[in-house]
Image 1 (cartoon, rainbow, N blue to C red):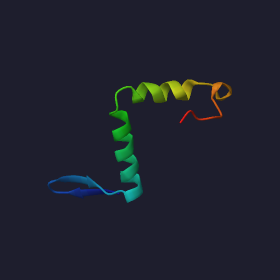
Image 2 (cartoon, rainbow, N blue to C red):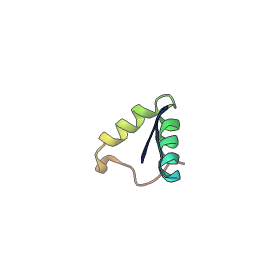
Image 3 (spheres, helix red, strand yellow):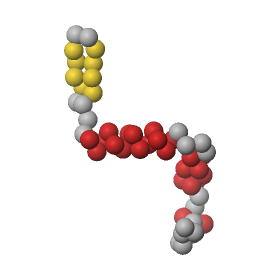
Image 4 (cartoon, one colour):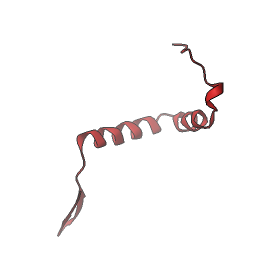
Length: 54
């Protein structure tokens, strides 16, 4: 929802959407995370491990 006022505009969104935006900004500020995500997205599913190392 865009709220238009005399001194400027504002955006109203759900708490869930706001938390998602905050989490995305946090993750993208971790050095190397953006590249790691891009690499993961380009990896074929057949090459992905079914077991976690942690």
